[in-house]
Length: 438
Ligand code: GDP
Ligand code: MG
Image (cartoon, rainbow, N blue to C red; front, side, top):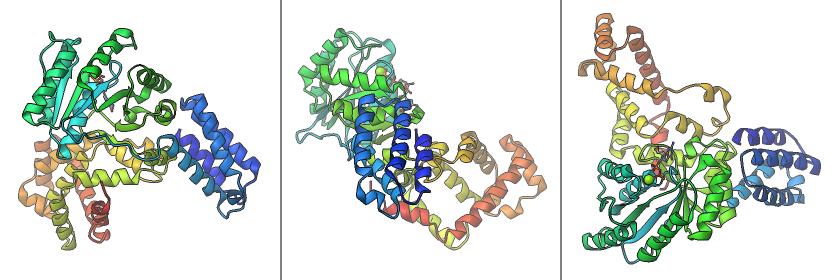
């Protein structure tokens, strides 16, 4: 979707004055792009109507940069379509806040439960995960493993007690132990049916959750929207967690959910890793779709992962030009924490639509190899790479299972990075990261 829209807008941008026909032509292209992205027909129709109405107004046609004005309008309307502002989870004034995750099988409920608990824990909350899916034998285990990985307690009564009873007891347990967030994982089915809805309604009636969050798979496009509509109609939902947005290139579900169901997307799943859950920001999603990159998310990511103390030390080192291979290793590890390199590149403005960069496979395995090579060096070598001669290179290569030319490449990359960082004049990026708000 982003690519199609960027093409359309490039044409507009390069024009001087716009005529109504120019706008009409652009809107026809936008319409096709949206439909191809699996945005619901009704949503597209309304959207185009709104944009067109605003775009053929005097202010646009007579302005100096009409193309940009149209893009601005499209951006604003896309943002509005997705709910304008970020929707937070409602926290009860009387803890615990109870969140219930519902959705079809495989949508990502259990994974999202773990991610959400992790997210809340990072915000200083004390979450309790509840294993309410008793039908798939592995489901309880899956949640327990997640809980262990994250250091978050999981409440389970096995698979012989009814989910309603499990939820009820979990609530008592949370009150007794002082957990302030209870996240209930529930069972899904392949299709929506009465049995599924009946059980969910029972849990709802028993524990009266503060929020019912529907988990849907972005990659299923229009189906995800239909599922959301049905769940909202049958059960009533408060918000949506849109998963697998990392694999969704079309954006249809993200764009339609809010306007079809009236319920906002609150979080987006961006990968399989347990920190790959982000609050959903409509304006940033709109920017991403329009290919402007998502600078704010990038800054936040950098900020969340960048140890401030480390950043300070690094700044000091750069000032003194003492950047060593040890620091380089540190940087690589910081980078790895930020998530996939591809993701990060896509968020940089102008990179989203850059064909060449997109084809360029950034191999995360490469990171691992670079780490191994640096780890095979002696502290002395890491601090004074200029002493690394031929025989040292041979030893390092053997130690890290690489070749001498790999060591040469690494050293070259190190020197280039060092040079680049020096030009940065004390690391503008780290400073910028600090300023962004969470
Ligand atoms: P459930 O049946 O609804 O509980 O679904 P699961 O939580 O078991 O997830 C099903 C699959 O989707 C698992 O393999 C997850 O790793 C994967 N998954 C969940 N969320 C995401 C996401 O945001 N991105 C990607 N790429 N995979 C995800
Ligand atoms: Mg599950």
